[in-house]
Image (cartoon, rainbow over all chains, first blue to last red; front, top):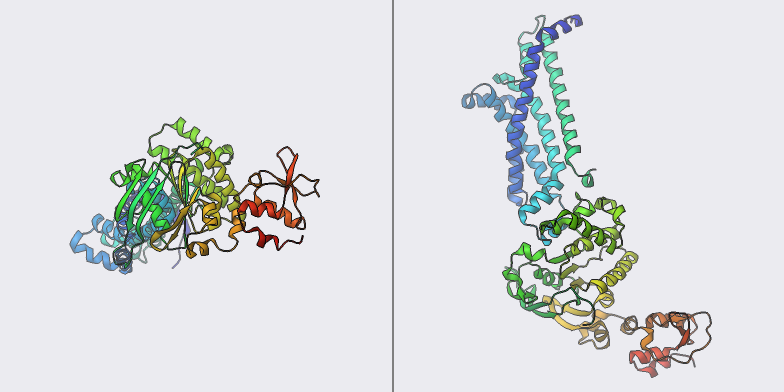
Length: 220
Length: 333
């Protein structure tokens, strides 16, 4: 099939508002899912990091979830949560758990026990030690977990279009379903490229957040 | 006690720590009375319970039974965190907070105590100078930018931040190289001479105990006190074979290091051979000079360089109260 590059620009111009709206949805659904996963994932990490059995169980469970093919999971979710946002947010949130839980656990475990002991020995309460010492020291590692989760979510969100989820995935599926038509490749390519741009933008934002929120004393 | 003190007394009575499932206690019936401003060394082999004993004073480890009083106040009845803010704590691994600057590290306890910014800032400056780190150079650095010895000084400064009457130190110089360790020990002695804290200092290094301690408690298993006395008394009269074995070889030489030349009865002044020893130096250094001098007596000079006498091997062993005949036999007359 011949592809006329000259047709790309008019396509983009014509579809500009729609592309913008779908991109916005894509970013939004990732942000919502990531926030939910962050609360649950970091919370779980905080609860289990010191307990060997619970820790292994949590990381293993999150790992198993990640092995479920996204298409399969989304299909299972349709009868429960219906089509659209709810299924998408649910799927993205639980896929994000593994990197977040694991990195929270790893980050907290990497804090030198001597540092915790001297903090306790200076008269900090357990909560103060957690908030002022452990979390700030573990923060770069936890943040990396969030960053990986964001990358994962941006990609999986594309597939969520299959259950009528929000985001740029709609363009990819549209392209697939009209294969052979004049605009098929335009849809698929636009969807793909925009998703890559969104993923890179998330990465850039995380790098910036890391710079701004990690102490110079523990930056590598 | 003549030296200045801002310390408090510590009284441990029948303190025991046992862990469930272990046949014998880690610390059993430990009793000790520590005077304000005293530097007490707990010395013993690893696993003897010396660290456990120390950590019960600030309740990092909770005693199973017994009582611990600081200035007459029962620490077990106090709030743990409030108690610890009044006790300086230095551990071997130092445990500086890597995400905080040196100034922030030192400010932790003052902040917990609610000091205002100006007071905290001036205290940080004062403490950095006290441990011989230039505040303008070091205050805003991070721990990873400091050498081991510098980090250890910050550890001591941080523990002193809120001017606690009591300090607990767990092998604070253990992880540094020998040269740095000796320097830190010397600095620490000078510091303690000025501040006069009550210090409980744990070490497995008997030489360190001799050098730093006002009194040394030699501990054996379950933190049993084998002997609790001044360094000189322990070296002169070890109470048991266990203590002697802990002192190791060369008890007499170790004692010499504790006695200044001024305490020995000197021989007549004589014109020197170039080598001389100051009155403020110790007998071990004097002996060192005698050996270098081919065994002959060495002139002793006052601080102003004036010769005040000479010192011989006999003078030294007399000062030690040792059996001179056996020693003088070794010396070619």
